[in-house]
Length: 95
Image (tube, rainbow, N blue to C red; front, side, top):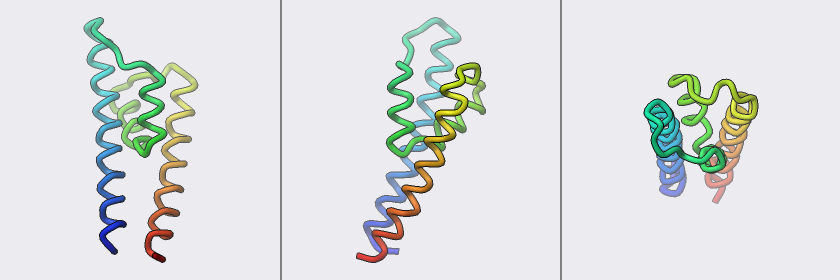
């Protein structure tokens, strides 16, 4: 594995941890009627490589599971993230 692939893997992990934390923070704020993270921001995090973490957070914290667009959208973005991740790692490996 070359340096660029390692950096991309680190970015992927950090983005997913960020997605998990965002779902946890939004759930916590929902419980106390605090400031909420907008839904489009949660989807943006999931789109930009945080889909696995956001999906895990959705089910782990039972947050947004009644919204069909989250229930199906986040796992779809997570799958898209994995496909792109594998493609990019293979592409970077050929450089």
